[in-house]
Length: 146
Image (cartoon, rainbow, N blue to C red; front, top):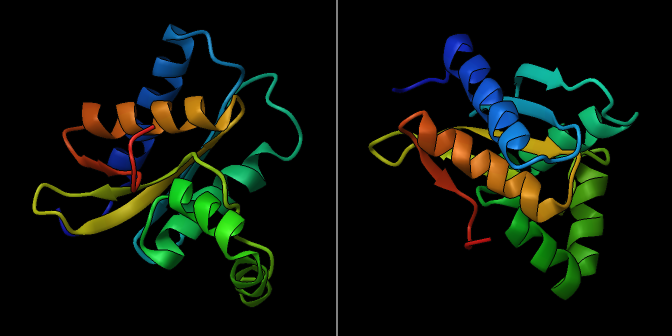
């Protein structure tokens, strides 16, 4: 796969939502971006709070922008807060440095997009993203294990 299709993106979002229901996660919002950082699909569960779409997009966008899962961006925010502040200035506040943004790699290891999830704890958000990607037969790259 050289590009993330709409069908794959919608399937990823559906799988993430289904996994969230299996583990009784809080209402989730799922954003799937292509390798260029463009939104392909966004799904917000009933009951998801107001800013969840922006947070989910920000987690995925940060992963695409820096080529690493948002868990690593959270570590960067702790270790290099000035860098993350500058990054958010350059990205017009678009980066959310918290787990839940996971790169999507094809079977050859090429990045085809990212999924960002918000709604529960960041660890659960990330777990739902990884499960959806792997269920689709793709490689999840969160940077480090949850």
